[in-house]
Amino acid sequence: MVLAVKSAKRPLAERLWAKVIIPENPNDCYLWMGAKSHKREGQKRPVIWTDDGTRNAARIVCEWAHGPPPTPKHEAGHTCPTGENEICVNPRHLKWQTREENEQHKVRRGSSRSPVDGGVPHTPIANPDSASTP
Ligand SMILES: [Zn+2]
Image (tube, rainbow, N blue to C red; front, side, top):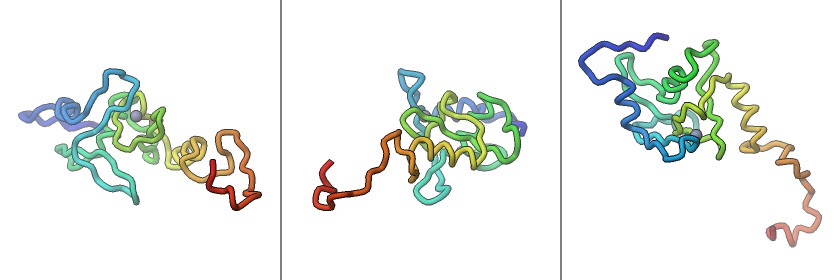
């Protein structure tokens, strides 16, 4: 995918970064303050208007940082240390991954239900009376 730079208007990079809060620590998440669209339930993605229409800003940043996606199945995935931050556009936190890899990632991090929970085995609730006490 070639980014269309058609003149006159400010360059896409300039417009894009103007919508981002860049933290002092470059390893923290870069928060997208621009428009967001809803992808799936409860999820948002950063979007920016370009000459090619509305595009996912995280995907654009991922292209800049890592080149075009290896296959059309790859999406800009988040590897934020604090967990997947849908509106983060830090190039360090973005990588190309397929939906399957993305799902595996979530399972590893425990953000979706899985039997592996940080190495702590799940104990069945032996005493329902104390279930709510940590
Ligand atoms: Zn991040």
